[in-house]
Picture 1 (spheres, rainbow over the protein chains, first blue to last red):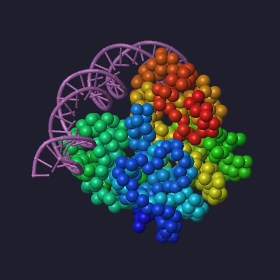
Picture 2: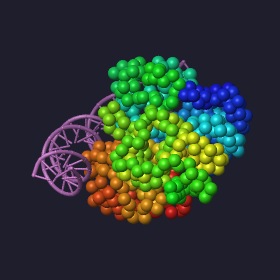
Picture 3: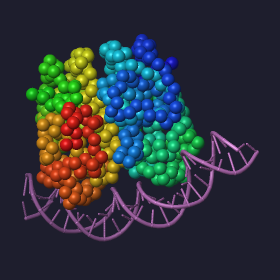
Picture 4: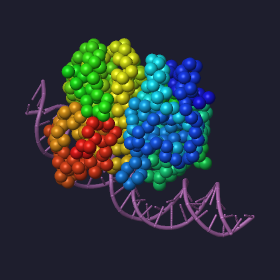
Length: 241
Length: 241
DNA sequence: CGATCGATTGATTTTTGTCAAAGACGGTGG
DNA sequence: CCACCGTCTTTGACAAAAATCAATCGATCG
């Protein structure tokens, strides 16, 4: 139940039953976090890691004026700060975006999991997947214009949600404000609003009432130069579909 | 010799002699790569990882028009694609910037290294350090203007070079063209040229003949909102110095 | 010497940010 | 039930930042 979505849909790295139950038994607590709550602060030593069961969370770095740059968005199934087991304390903050149900896994109990070679490799993989997403985000910010960034982000999020059964490729729930989106894409919220209008007017997608409708996901993917290889999903034949 | 700089200067994660020699013995070959040579291509299965002994390399993602976005710069001591041991094939390309001397470590020989709990953790750490740098780069691209990005990048590079004894904090060699810098900072090379002139005119730093002079590293760090915590360096008291 | 690559600069256009205000919407308390 | 409030969205007018286009300059290399 708790680990259902962990590594779900990833190329040949899915958990077997033993591994799954080993992780489940390492969970010390399941907790509900309200929306918009800071869960982890940069620089504070951590003694446990967090797996998202339900809801969305984000990592971010704050600038001098307190403005956030989101550096990661996390969905159910993401072992969001597994890396704090090795990289402690963290270099960034983590907060909930929506209300979230999370599983707490103490670091002491991660040690024996990591000691199992196959499982250790899968856990390592999951942290490297975050790094791969960071790189895609770098590409997005560095090479795409504002519209392309939004298109790329929506394609990525759709692909990730599909992997955990939360999008059908046509529409999905995304409970972010336009300011959140702006903090992801490195633009102002005013400009984000204009981009969303343009995408809507061009018939590529709509984003209303926390629902994204991917009207022409093919055009969106092209606009955002999106290629999902970096997500290491199963069924790569269905790419960008 | 080969591994001298690997994890050098990092908080409490340095290699002991046994670990060092274990890695050295895993090296199958030392090779020299000419400047400006693609070493690893995205999507191609890999059977070994590469540790830089001398020279600089970069990772990048190419856009539709063939323009690169650099997503990482790598220095001597960086185990640049250790992550390909777990994440294979890679999602990005790797190329040399300068001539480089590299050590090749076959994946089969990494397996027993990873199996040693302490060493495995350190190897994992080194891949997470890359992820932490990715996040800092995301902050740079998402929240800083062009001048701030350059300032931030120079501060980061100075700090990393100091960790491996290749900068004294006043000046260091950096054999990149202005176009390389532009590809790192997500701006055009024309604009990069203007930024460098401005930083020179403002007396913050100069960049000529492949040498960076950090004239006022304090002001540079402020301009780029640079805080080196994410590099997990020893002697954090000397931060931003 | 011509060719090439990188650095530099000016003029202009495009993109994005900033500032300001109004509109929409849901939730709350009277 | 309705008025009020806060948050989020939307829009316009304008300013700032960066890209683009075009050209020149300088050094290096065969």
